[in-house]
Amino acid sequence: MGNKISRNVRPMIGNRKLERPRKRAAKGDGMLLRREILDAAAGLLAETRNEDSVSIRAVAEKVGVSTPAIYIHFHDKESMLMAVCTEVFDELDSRLQIASSGVDDPVEILRRQGIAYVRFALERPEHYRIVFMRRSSIPLTGTYDIDPVSTNVFQRLLSTVHQCQEMGIFPPGDGVQIVLALWSVAHGLASLLITKPYLPWPDVEEFADLIFKMARLGISAFTPE
Image 1 (cartoon, rainbow, N blue to C red):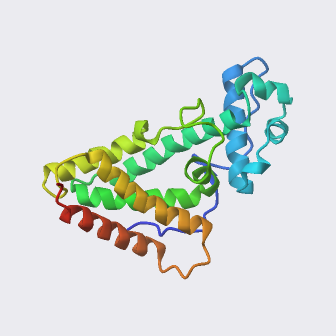
Image 2: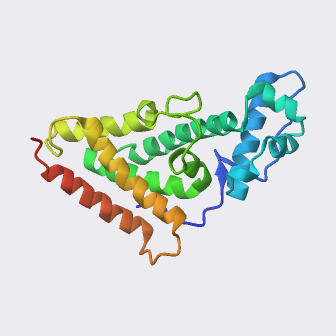
């Protein structure tokens, strides 16, 4: 099954370790500065695992610029964090793609994607919590929200579900509802592992495999009205 899921994974940003120094953007180069700001915010989230520690001032100090320089690129802390989490979604999609590459069986693809999802959540617990486990003060139609259904992650899962439906593994009907059911299972496990690591968990990867199998069997046995 590859590497086991660990609840004590060393935080990484992309393929770069946090302690690796970043090259300072040249003055006046707005896009490079924005990149440094996002890297710094993502690094602070991973290092501290505490959203409250990622203030505009803390990010500015980490990058080596004044706080007004941050506001040139982001209106406030919320918009900065959502920009970071948008990139996290992109990385999650890459993980799901890698996990299912070279596999033709859609059931096996779903299994691998589910395990990759949980593993990713445990490696990015604070990023995951911001997107899925907090009540934002911004309305659901707000500028800073991420609509999961519109993400590549959701569409990738939906494509796999459609393959299962075409093969008769899942019943016909609304594939979106099936994705939401499977996502609910993955999120439930991920959130419990993040917030309640002291529970008597068995081997996490084997347990994830078991509950995803139970969910698939339940969906397969369901007959729509």
